[in-house]
Amino acid sequence: MKLEPAIQHSRPPLERMLRIHQALQAGGFPNASKLAREVEVSTKTIHRDIEFMRDRLNLPIEFAPANNGYFYNGEVSGFPTMQITEGEIFALVVAEKALQQYRGTSFEKPLLSAIRKMEQALPDTISLNLADIEQTISFRTRAEPILNLEIFDTLAKAVAQRQQLELHYRKPGQPAEKRLVDAYHLANINGEWYLFAYDHARKDLRTFVPARIQSVKPTGKNFERTQKFSLEKRLRDSFGVHAGEGEFDVVIRFTPRAADYIREKKWHPSQVLRDLKNGAAELKMKLSSLAEVQRWVLSWGGDAKVLQPKELVTAVQQAAEAILNPPRGMF
Image (tube, rainbow, N blue to C red; front, side, top):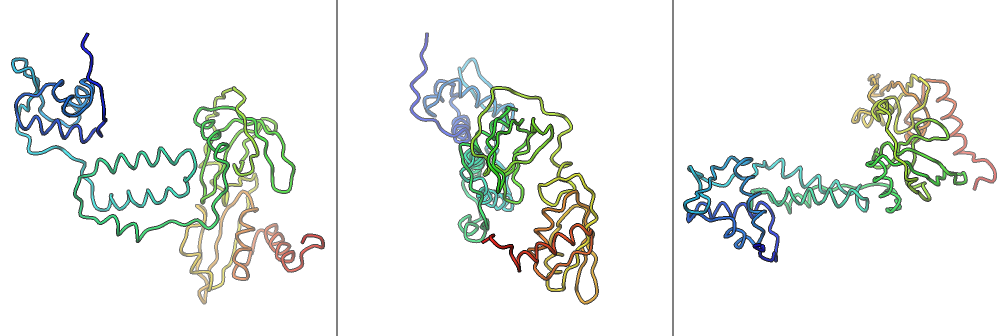
């Protein structure tokens, strides 16, 4: 039985194939054993690399039994390399910077690993100065969510493996309670993480904030996710992540000072924006819940006025009065 040579190093696949290509170009009919010694990998790895070069890169590699080695049966001007544009390189660097919202989560390492592999496949010489991009593009988060990484990792695995979980979950201002859930989906929405899960006690889909989960434990049971679940459909009529069961025609008027900011973004798929005289604007939306849009209106201060529905008009007025005259004992 022939033993493979001890492997001291492992070269990146692209570097190995370039070495094989150079050996074939030089002639001499190199075989797998010779190439394995030169590249410091096993002969099985060389065989896989040659198959990839022949079948996927369409290089005319053949084996010559009389010479006990490989050769190019045709003209090869150069090794096929990844063709990448300056814009794609720019996008790659921007994508790496955008990883900020995944720092510390279980997604960080695989995402960085994928980006590193793409970077290794780039040609040695590029015309774009990546250092310049580092100085010109950045991402900042106003309020970064505080995550228990152990809990977050458990949630991510449960979603991927369709595991049932037992949560100790605390809503703001309430004591923690036990919740038995089927973990359907983990989403980052506007920089915040949310778990969408079927709550067995409430027999309905619920939205959980990972930062409010005090402890989590897999029950050892798996579940079949219902085909009816669609995050896009669930959030279609919401203003954020809260999906209600109502139907509200929301109309908000903005002063000229705020109207230009409103015109710069698409706030909701259903929105209809109408320009008014003197630079003001009127925004119409169809929503299923008013909780989040109420907070949004208040964030504009005196530059936003709710025209309808009456429920939202009243809620905003009461909130504004509470800001001016907070109830006794609140502070």
